[in-house]
Image (cartoon, rainbow over all chains, first blue to last red; front, side, top):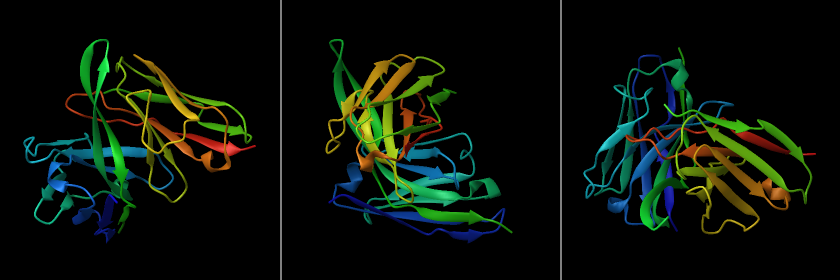
Length: 131
Length: 109
């Protein structure tokens, strides 16, 4: 069974830092593209960023609010994904989910295209930024 | 940035009803559109990817359609377990900025 388990959330003061972890099992982690998605209390979902597999360059992409403050990394030897949160603001208060991205190749109009989606989700870890 | 607008924001319906939720994007995204279901206190679940492909394990009463800027999620006959919040998400942007719609809360009438 594919499983993602986040940890590391907690209460932190504005300007502080936190590192979230996501332990993966049940699939070949080093081949997976992984994302972080967050959800502020009572609000909708917000994509935070993504890291590709090492084979695909281990490159990272971030949403605008995360650029320059957050960093996604992975340790394939430990089957673990990380999200380093720096310079935290009260508006970063949220449940943070890690996800395994699904990648599907589909035929459309005689050509093949790759589609991405958040296929498997962890249960989330809560980050509260408050003084 | 691609803006996502879902309608309605909330919806009341009864078991057995046919329900349609709409997602509109600010620019064409071909069929790079996903739908998720989220129940209170739970993580979201992928229902539909590539606008119309049903994710494995998702009941066939769920279906998706659309391309370009207008998309729909249809539940053909509502079941009690379908009352939840539904989100659309685009995966078109390069570099990726996978924005979500604001959500549609489906409640029991």
